[in-house]
Length: 179
Length: 412
Ligand SMILES: Cc1cc2nc3c(=O)[nH]c(=O)nc-3n(C[C@H](O)[C@H](O)[C@H](O)COP(=O)(O)O)c2cc1C
Ligand code: SF4
Ligand code: FES
Image 1 (cartoon, rainbow over the protein chains, first blue to last red):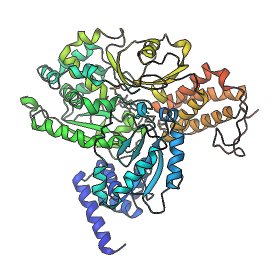
Image 2: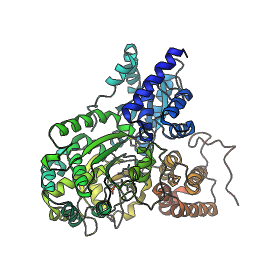
Image 3: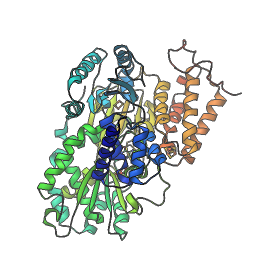
Image 4: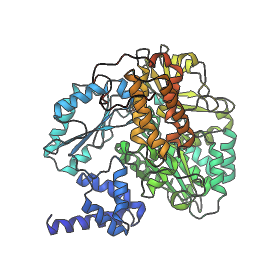
């Protein structure tokens, strides 16, 4: 990493911690924001946060490794989380899973070589009456069928050109099918 | 068919703000008395009397107290809180504000699950409007000295953080590991201060009770489980979605309303609830009979009960925080047992041992997750023994992903 890049990162994290209140209770909001901006929490970042908050880096690692939406491993730009819990299971999540694997060419838990997509399992997403359900970053898709998988992936691919942050904003609009 | 009709819910008939105004004319003691009269019990599943929780927090002398709304809604099959947050957020905020008045808190926190991040911006805009309207901030609704504001904090994808002490740990920036109780959050909660944690729906009923009176709430439900309740219905039935029914409804009545009368079983209360077979459909949904946080999963005649049990057990293996041994080690052991059953390689003796392990977990686990994770398995074994025993082994790789060479044999 370039020195200037490191300094930029450090400044960015310092600012975030100040914004969220410079104490332990700010740790998770800070980690969530870093995860959102950078896609993962690197060891270097964990050390930085630990230094600023005056806690041991292991404390930061403990938290990072606990929550499934925060992680050490680098993820793709679009994280697809398919619900595998009972109602979605009964509504045919297996076939959707299969099609996702086929269309992306990766298995669950993996990231595409171009770092665009990560495929993961999730537990109940609170859309059990409209399953199978999946999340793409923050956006929810319901009643997913094997043949609509392609459209969902295309929708993501279309936003590739856009700036990452901008693209994430368009992805967190309140879905019309939320109820 | 997805048939949630929010316009028919009681929440649609109570104007936001009216219940709050009425409540703010009362003293804190009177508010708690009103809730006591209504008999409202927690809608998150455990059914703890709301007035008692509030009274305990109100009685502690502390400058700082907190009101926390549990919007972690992680229980499989539950989605009513999402509907409330989308359509009746203002009523819920009213409820939190009344709660803060009752216990003397000045800060509220909504712990919203990470999976609902798409609701955050919407809820923030609601809060901003409330601040403009004087419903939050200094001297709420002109009430001198009553200051209250609400902040939204996001969860990060951990079911166990719905447990109230784990939720508080998470708010404090820790791993979401449940604490020993006592001390209870009403004494030592967020940052060591008295804290009430209530479910989204519990808070939303508060302004309705303030507006319509405790007597109105008593018109519904049973002696010990008063009032109305939202149910999240999914699975094998004609109508799925969120429905409002009185407490004390029998499963039979409920299934008639959602076109699911041919069900062979109903999972009441989500993964941590229990599986009720058809012969028990005249039982009631109430805290004194079959309790639930609102999750109703209808299981049709074509379903394999063992696969249902397996799905639930995989859920708990994923979501156990790993802090205590019965739950961390017990859940994988039960899952292994289910796989043996699926392969038709489980002796009756071993099944009995698994059941006794389940009972040990119910007694010895530290929090509600491990205490209730064996429920589904135990009730399926109790009611569907005929279906789950003596299976012919499936062809390799069709039902279980478990590696045949690695699967341990049933002892004895
Ligand atoms: C593992 C576990 C998960 C829980 N998840 C939730 C949840 O998602 N939402 C909720 O309101 N309560 C949940 N609870 C219950 C809470 O611990 C607590 O009892 C509840 O928030 C109290 O609110 P109430 O009295 O209004 O129901 C959970 C409990 C356990 C043991
Ligand atoms: S019962 Fe399970 S979830 Fe609860 S504290 Fe123990 S290990 Fe953690
Ligand atoms: S079971 Fe998939 S969203 Fe609830």
